[in-house]
Length: 290
Image (tube, rainbow, N blue to C red; front, side, top):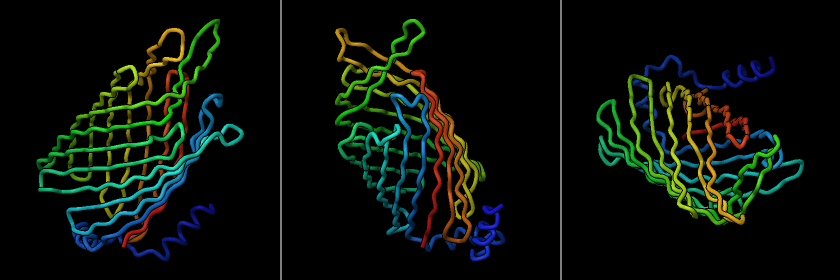
């Protein structure tokens, strides 16, 4: 009840945009050049040993110097807990979205993390998007470099699960290709990924399906399903071991404009890996545009 009363109080001070026609709302939003958003969340992981729980947060700033270019900078912080803090790190990212023509668009990002075992030391993303009316073709590539990485694998014996952990310098290269579909206020995307993990040149594949509904300035709701495997080499044993773990994740997110230029958003996620490991996540945040 308190949450509904608080939301009612917020709406009392918010500009009513529900009666604005869509075309008028789009025209007014063209004047917005800046936005900032922040969020915090928690991931509950089972089993606790050896994984621990996760707390995370981020703040991001966006700027549109011209209508076809959007720049951003983002800082993420993450901490791992298992009764006590096991480690924490910060990841900084800068990037840009560019509409080169009505049919060619790009997304480029460069990220660098602090020296910890669960954040990339370096991350590079490049997406190319070719669109024709309601249809698009997406091609991308992502590169990760980890200073150290926690690799887990399991050994089953006498109904016991034993986890082995290896700190190892690691690089991942992940090309992807996908299709997008835009009909009215619906957005659908299907995408396939091929991941090459080194050392060991271990190859794995995964797929993504996403469905969204909404529009900028009103609301967005997305559901995403990812299924695939993770493959890597554990080489600190008497004999090197190629490990493959199956995994899938489901997420639902919602972003809602309470006023013309600000609102709230949140997400719920669930991920399962065949280690076994289950991850339950929640994220809550707010944004402001001007």
